[in-house]
Image 1 (cartoon, one colour):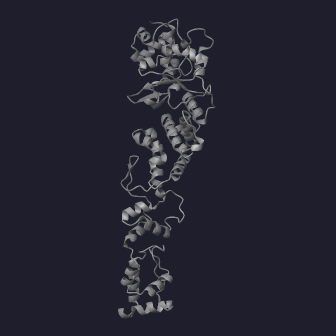
Image 2 (cartoon, one colour; image 1 turned 60 degrees about the horizontal axis):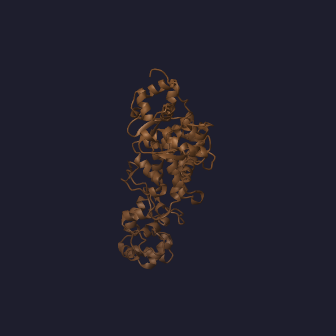
Image 3 (cartoon, rainbow, N blue to C red; image 1 turned 180 degrees about the vertical axis):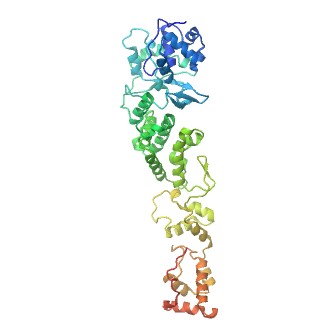
Length: 466
């Protein structure tokens, strides 16, 4: 067929090449697979959007190259086994290749108009309806609804054949649902697909990555706002809206929201996967997809700034070379003492606030800054060992404590081993150096116990444990 056929449809806005082919076949009283052969190619060539087959379709329909390209752009051209190019952007195939075909019944009914017969020849399937991230027809404010589910692509995309049976119900309003105003997410995605324009920070990000993050991040947000969520098929749309409301404001807003999610977690063993849900899983799965790199980096930063990740642990495919944070439990496990003791000493040292609102697992402190203190804790001794090592009496030790000449590492009343042995031995050595013989060194201690504090070496009174 070297020339255009006399019976041919006019492409509808956003119509897919396969919808156009199906309507073209229906106008010529043929099934799509048979009509494809009449055009000179097996149906498989059209399903794969083979260039030669599409050129033949355009020739038979009398289409200008720009119109042909527009049909193809709303269909999506496979790039490899897992990816396709759709509206000049890369998508994964599963974002569009779904056996369930959805549509807007109001648009389909408008396509058919007042025709008395064969409305399926006029009803065009739009390319944006195929995207799983699209839930609403922004033109008619109607949610996309499933129309059929067919496994075999040759039958699934023969829309005119499917609509032949469904057209009476569509025309009668059987698929109609309550309308809803488009959200900011709906309008953003619709405009981005139509024109490529994007006034938000997301302009530099890939659409598929953004829509994926919007939904998964939104799901995590809605878990902490149960009263604002609805059930059923609206939950996905609400998750997309909630995620987009944060992401569209920019990187700083996303980072802050991630921190808020972490802080709103509860429990003693809360982990990043529990806090952000499927977002963590998805970013871990898409390690080789550079489109997700900016979001993966921000989540990784949040994890390392919030959770006590151990050195050598892999976080979203990066290994932490040195521990940044500890919490009382991880520190206690590392140095071999009780969690309660670590918590008491770190609180006394100011590393942890006395009233800490954070979840137990997230009561963290700087591991490097307080490494010296953690190293001291296992060496602490009780009163008896301290007295024996110093050769002091209880009265003398009490006076030394009251005068803050030596101090316990923790003042907790239940602390059984609060003393740093090195402090006592250092004081004894200092006193010994000021005496002529070791037998007279505790004369000074006796004087201190009697209130003669002037004998203490300058600066010793204000000595700190460090």
